[in-house]
Image 1 (cartoon, rainbow, N blue to C red):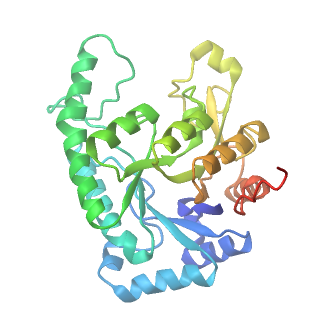
Image 2 (cartoon, rainbow, N blue to C red):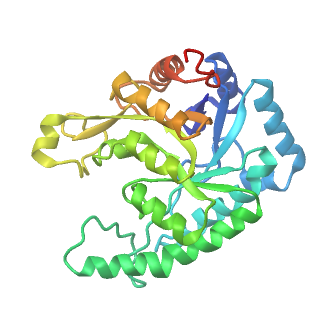
Length: 322
């Protein structure tokens, strides 16, 4: 396995300094933000797509620091009922799919998106329960009239480019757990898979180790984020985990994102890494820093140090003891 970074968190450093920093802390891989919510902090993907020299420079700059480009991040809502968002995020996604192989990767990381509750809606509508009956009608519309047609088309286009779509299961979007991810994959195409981010599973009550087992058995773990979550048991007991409290109001929230090792320790991370290995994943663990208690540098470097100590780097040896 390799240790990498979701580089949107390093955007304030600028391109060269961010790459130098990645080399300095000993990373081997980088996930580049190219649109959607992560933005386009390092280069204009549309312009790079038209310019082979710019593509080669990006690859050379990364290779010179020992960094493999392992994915293009374009998390967005390409099925949003808000036309401006839908058009922009779809355009960003399409560019990423066409650009990925030219930058040496075959993985594009994004969200499934969330439509409105009907063709008349003006905002996304994320359904979280099965009743009253209105919600079943919303789900039928979202899946059968929007999501499945959209992602069936996109899966075919990505396959033609030799690209895998790594959907990050995230509350607020229609794919938010293993079941919904596998449902979309079955309906739309086998090159749709997972960006397995344990942080979003923790606060839903999902065991990320078991999620890795199920998604690994389906052969669809295409990317993994290194990100942790801590639950506040006092606030959870009072309000549960569906929490719209500001991320800055740390004392009132039921959960917060944490640097790897600060939400969960070896009791989670070692079995998680081992399950990934057991299911054949030997790719990158891409650190995404969103810890409200730490600066980017401190939180990121603590994550690097912790994950470096538990990653399985070498191929398994033979069972010499029998």
